Amino acid sequence: MATATRPARSGPAAAVGRYRWVIVALLFTAMVINYVDRQTISFLKGDLSKEYGWDETNYADLVFWFQATYALSYLAFGRIVDRIGARWGFGLAFLIWQAAHMSHALAKSLGGFIGGRLLLGVGEGGAFPGGIKAMAEWFPKKERAFATGLFNAGTNIGAIVTPLLIPAVVLAFGWRAAFVVTGLGGLLWLPIWLLVYRTPRQQKSLSAAELAHIESDPADPPGKVLWSVLLRQRETWAYAIGKFLIDPVWWMWLFWLPDFFGKRYHLDLKTFGPPVVAVYLLSDVGSIGGGWLSSRFIKAGWSINRARKTTMLICAVLALPVAFAAQASSLWLAVGIIGIATAAHQGFSANLYTLPGDVFPRSAVGSVVGIGGMIGAIGGMVMAKYAGFVLDRIGVYTPIFVVAASVYLLALLAIHLLSPKLEPVEI
Image 1 (cartoon, rainbow, N blue to C red):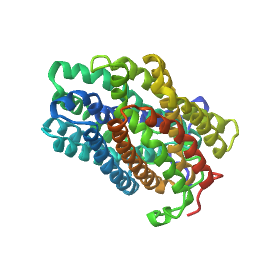
Image 2: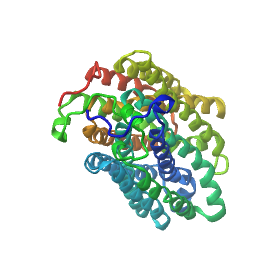
Image 3: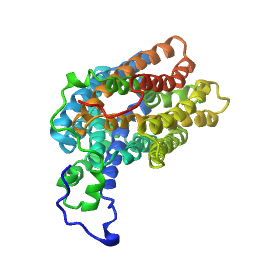
Image 4: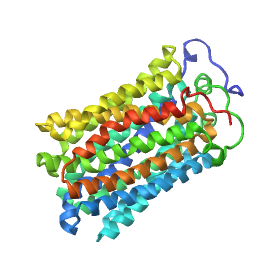
């Protein structure tokens, strides 16, 4: 690998800098905005269902069609960010999803909302391919899971902000204002991203020591990697099947958790806030803790394979009790069980997200993330239809929560069988 051309500094000033964490902070903030936009409709489900006469299947269709375009966009943006880079790829995705979010304010029928969700899926499908690409550009493998966990924690903060912000706006100005106010506020992020983000070698504020730290992994092979090549790799399918199994659970929490609290414990728009905030605060602990734990194992001398999979096994076991959450005798017992399960999901996910960067060259990371994200979104589409069917026909959440409890062990088994060593792929 070419050495840095910046003059080296001696003494204490030569310590590795911290500019790469500015990139994490920007992505963290973007994911807060992303999840406010994505989750707003779940807190309006009750009011919109009454106003437009939706049943559970209608609401499931909103989720389904969002995930349909999200799946296709995830795949497309995986290739886009590999071609034009994280700066412009992520910026384009952000602009599309903010515009789509605000367009919900114009909807006057189920079809109008579905149109808004379709466009939202197009934009939000680019968030994680762009973010993971940026992590691969800015962090060595030994730090990548922790950094990914930090920026992914923004999703939980977004899920915390939503129940605090949306009810206040709706009660003061109506539900249409909820989309406009959050959309315009979020747009302030975009010019900051475009001004700040560059690849490490293009960033003049980066010290020689920090650049050397970022580039401390072995050099990647030159050139682009074709999709046809990636689809023949077992490691691609290890990641994709893992996403197919676990992503639907997170979608379910995002789109149905307020409804569960409403049906089981009689909460409404004014009272959703504290329990939902508690769940996603626990999720943040899992996101950061899961990334930190595997990075800690690696620093202690463990192989990447052992560190990632041991952390994912711990998370998978912690998710098991959620099978019984629907029978919890009190609201806060249910919050505790679900919060631990969502924390386990985020810890598992933080490590799963690092796998493309662990085994593929940087030039292929966005594409692999895109393939896996598409497959994960297809799983989310299946979950949406399943949840709508169960709630319309049975009316209880237990069958859904049993699925949520079991998929992590299945995902880890699939990952291990397809990629038993998590070694770099020779392409």
